[in-house]
Image 1: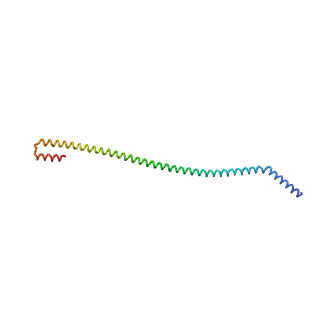
Image 2: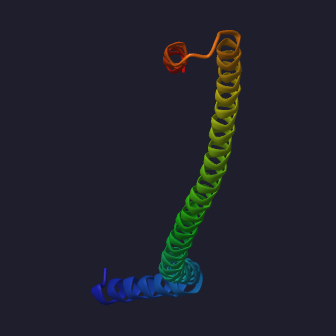
Image 3: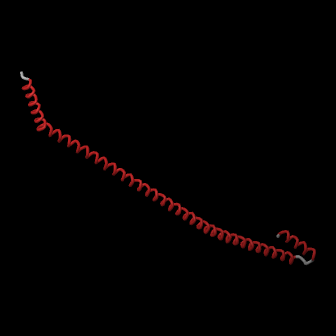
Length: 156
C-alpha cells in the first residue's frame, strides 16, 4: 500500500466527517446551546428582576410598618387623651354628686335640728304649763315656789 493514498483517503474521510458534522450535527448542537444560553440568560434576568422587586417590596413593607407604627402611636395617644377626658368628667360628676349629697345631708340635718327644737319647745311648754298648774294649785309662798322651780329645773 501506498502511504500517500492511505493518507489521502484518511484526509478525505476526515473531511467528509467534518462536513457531515458541520452540516447535520453542529446546527442542532448550536441550537441546543443557544437555547440553553437563552434560558440561562432569561433565568438570570428573572432572578435580577426578582431581586429588584424583593428590594422594592422590602422598602414598601418597611414604609407600611413605619406607617402602622405611627398610626398605632396616634391611636394610643388618642386613647390616653380620651381616658384623661373621661377621668376629668368623672371627677366633675363626682364633685357635683358630692355637692348634691352634702347639700341634701345639710338640709336633712337642719330639718332634724328644727324637729328637735320644736320637740324641745313642746316639752318645755308642756313642763311650763305643768309647772304653772302646780304653782297655781298650791298656795303661793316663796319657799314652795322655790322648791317647784328647782324641781322644774331638774326636769329640764
